[in-house]
Amino acid sequence: MRRLGLLLVAAAALLAPLAGAGAAEKFITVQSTTSTQNSGLFDHILPVFTGKTGIEVRVVAVGTGQAIKNAANGDGDVLFVHAKPAEEKFVASGGGVERFDVMYNDFVFVGPKADPARIAGGKDAVKALQTLAASGAPFASRGDDSGTHKKEKALWKAAGIDQGKASGGWYRETGSGMGATLNAAVGMGAYTMSDRATWISFKNKGDYAVVVEGDPILFNQYGVILVNPKKHPHVKAAEGQAFIDWLLSAEGQQAIAAYKINGQQLFYPNAKK
Amino acid sequence: MQDFGAAFGEAFRLLVSLDPDLVEIVALSLRVSLGAVLAAAAIGLPIGAALAVARFPGRGVALVALNSLMGLPPVVVGLLVYLALSRAGPLGPLGLLYTPAAMMIAQMILVVPIIAAVSRQTIEDMKEEYEEQLRVLGVGPSGMVATLLWDARFSLLTALLAGFGRAIAEVGAVIIVGGNINHVTRVMTTAIALETSKGDLALALGLGLILLGLAITVNAAVMLLRRTAGHAAFA
Image (cartoon, rainbow over all chains, first blue to last red; front, side):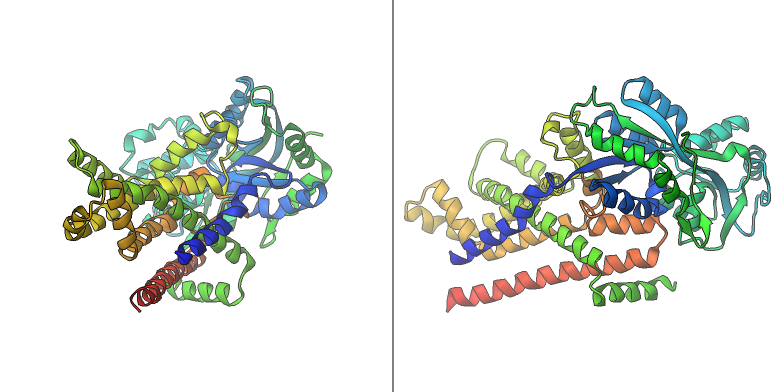
C-alpha cells in the first residue's frame, strides 16, 4: 500500500507543473507557415522581440490554408502567412483586423541535376511547366492548400494545363509540408516548387539543384494580420499588435534582413512605412 | 546510407552534451505520456475489470467495440480533441489548446481502450481461477472487481506498458492539439517530424534512437519494480 502512495505522489509531482503551464508569463500564439519555421527565421528573430518586450511568441507552423482556418476559429492571436488573396479574404470576412506586408522572397523550381525534362536554366516559370508537362517527368505538388500550393495551382492555370488530370501519374500530390514534399521529390526523382528559404535551409538536397528562378511571377509575399478581438474577445490584442508593430519597425525589418544561411539572405523585408 | 552512421553520431553527441533542448523535450514527452497513461489507467482498469466480471446482454458487442477502439487512428483523435478544445469549440473557453494538458487528453483517449481491453482479458483469465473461491466467501461483484484488480496488479503492468508504448510513440494527435510549439509543446515525436521536414535526417533518426532508448528505460524500470515488489510480496 505504501508503494501505491509513492506512486500517487510521483504522479502528482509529474502533473503539477502542467497546471501552471498555460497561465505562464505573457505570451501570444502565432499561426504561421512551415516555411518561416523550417527556415529557422523564427529562431533568429523571436528572441530579439521577446528580449525587448518580455512577450513570449508561441508559433504553430502549419500550411497557410490550415493556419487561416485555425485563426478563423480564434486559435491564435496573430496570423503570419503567405497567400495574399486568401489573407485579404480573411480580413474582409471579419476574421482579422488589417493586413500588412512584412517581407518577401521568391519561389524556385528544383529538380535533379540530370534534368530529364530539360527545363534547367529557364527564367520563364509558365513555359517551364508546359515543357515539364509535355515531357511527362514527375512533379511533386504540396497538394495541401498551403500558400505554396495555391501559387503552384495559379501557375498551372496560367500555363493552360489541367494538372489534376495527371494526378497519380506524373503529377504527385504529397499532401504534406514543404520539407516533407522536398524529401518525397528527392526520393522519387520528381521536380517540385519550393519557397527559396525552405530550399536553402533544407539539408537533404541529394543531387538536386534550382532549375528555374528569377521570373517575377514567382514573387512570394508574406503578410501579418491581428486576429480580430471583436470576433474573438480572448485575443491578446495589445501583445499581438506589439509583435506586429515590431515586425514592421526598422528594428524588426533589420532582424529579418540579417538572417542568413551560408551568406545567403532568405527573406527581404518590405513593410510600407 | 551514411545517414545511419551519422544518426548514431548525432544521438551520441546529444546525449553526451546533455543538450538542454533535448532534456526539455524528453522531460515533456515523459510527463505527457506518463500522465496520460496514469489518467487512462484510472479510467481503463475499472472498465476492464467490470467488463471481465459482469455478464449482461450485448456484452459481446461491447467487447468487440472496445477491442476495435484499440486501433483508433491518432490523427482522428487529434482532430476530435482539436474541435473540442478550439476557441470555436465547446471547451474553447478553457484555453487548453496548444498546451501539454491538451496533449495528455488526446493520448489518454488513445490509451484508455488499450488498458481496458488488455486488463479485461487478464482479469477474466484470473477470474476463472478465483471465481468459485470468492463466491464461497460471499464476495459481491464490486468486491470481486477490487480483489481481482489487486491480485492481478503485476500482470496489469503489461497493459499499462502497452498503453505507454502507444502514447510515447504517437505523433498524429499531439502535433494537432499541441502545435509542436518550441519550449511549450514540442515532444520527441513532433521534434522528429520537424527535423525530417527540415531534411536533417541524421538528427531525426538520432532523436528516434533516443526515443527508443527512453522506451527501453521505462520498460526496464517497470520490470525491475515488478521483480523487487514480487520478492517483497512473497518474502
